[in-house]
Amino acid sequence: MGAKYFGEEFPSNNFVLSSTDERRFTKHIHDNVHGNIYLDPLSLKFVDTEQFQRLRDLKQLGLSYMVYPGAVHSRFEHSLGVYWLASEAINRLKNYQGLELDIDRFDTQTVKIAGLLHDIGHGPFSHMFEREFLPRVLHGLKWSHEEMSLKMIDYVVDEHSIDIDSESLKKVKELIIASENGASKTFKEKLFLYDIVANGRNGIDVDKFDYIVRDSRACGLGCNFQFQSTFYSVVSFELGGNNLTMSPFQAIELMFVDAITKANDVLHISSYIDEPAQYWKLDDTILKTIETSSCQDLKESRDLVLRIRRRDLYQFCNEFAVPKENLVHFKKVTPQDIVCSQNSRHPTLHEEDIAVSNVRIDLTRGRNNPLESISFFKDYDSSEKFTIKDDLVSHLLPTSYQDMIVRVYSKKPHLVEAVSEAFENFQLKSYGMKTQVHATPEKKKRKQLRYNSTGDDNSHLGTERVYMPLIPEKHNAFYL
Image (cartoon, rainbow, N blue to C red; front, side, top):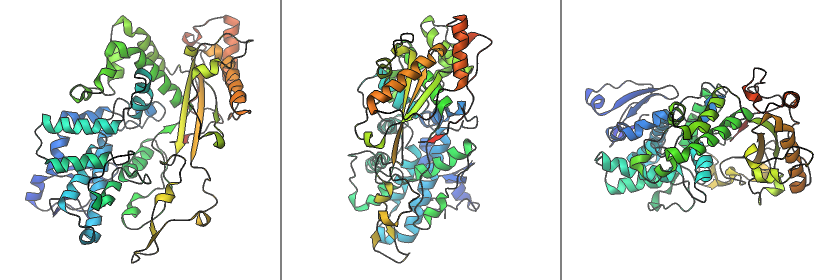
């Protein structure tokens, strides 16, 4: 099976194009995950724009490459991968149920373009920009990369005079935003099309099919998920994660957010978010812009970036898992919460001394079980669908489908013990117990003793500095 353009089938990855005419209308790209990918003419018009090429400078996993050296792949190859998987999915449906579902070339083309352009609205370092930076500098603003993708698509079509009709353009944008609550679906007779690229019902879509395999490979992790089987039979599978996160990664991300937040007023980063004509110029090179600038106003940001380069990171104090019964009414923990719980016997803490990371972990549907939104059939010929009841599900699967991990860091080495104790007090006051994962590492305590003996608040610049290990003892990686 291969991709199709206006009803003409192109061979799949295992075949070679034989027709000179077909070669003339397609572009062949080799992908290290999916093999040969063939781009149709309309898709090429989008790919061959500076706005789409910008995705080469957006890392797929944000700052994860600071922990996983191989995680340097970009949104560019991910977008091509989703395009190809969307093509494979819609063509398989057309081959086996095309008449029954009334799938036409309009459906095929719009699904493919939606897969190609679904991430064109991402900002620097992907989700970090959207979830951490913008909420800090633009309080109360509701902004999503999906919404920016829609604006970018309109801009690219106008800027490059791409010949795509208004109905197709409308459908492409609806398919991209389909996972959002309240997203419109004007083509209600073919609702199944909205599940291919951005599945809002259960989170199972070709976007995840690509990044689960691609991200796992880039990070050197094993991956047993075989997306190919979903194209041939109905199966249940456990969803993996988008971002891999652990203590050093969180410290790097928090420091980076601090750095670009401090640089925001000078570089006017946040002013780009509403205007596609400026926004498309914003990418991961913002880090180099800060590092190479001689502007005195950016000195604090440059110093933070230099610390990241030298892995002189914020010191991990501890973490705890929010009790399941408190998840419904959970409110993000802030540095102020920790400061208000400090012990008077320690040095006075200030909000700027503390960094807090609230990490939500779920299977795409919050506290809900995604299996509840998946329909199954008894066999290939069956037309009666059903859902899996709880008593038929393995008891090895989780009873809760969401976790919230709160991690706390000290920005100054000599305050580790004070922050750790304040964090413990906060847990006792808020939940009546300490649910932290492990005690403050001994290396951190020794580091504090060195400070106490020297009184040097700039100990992070000295030769005796202790580096945080890549994977701290007794600390596991979490999957988001």
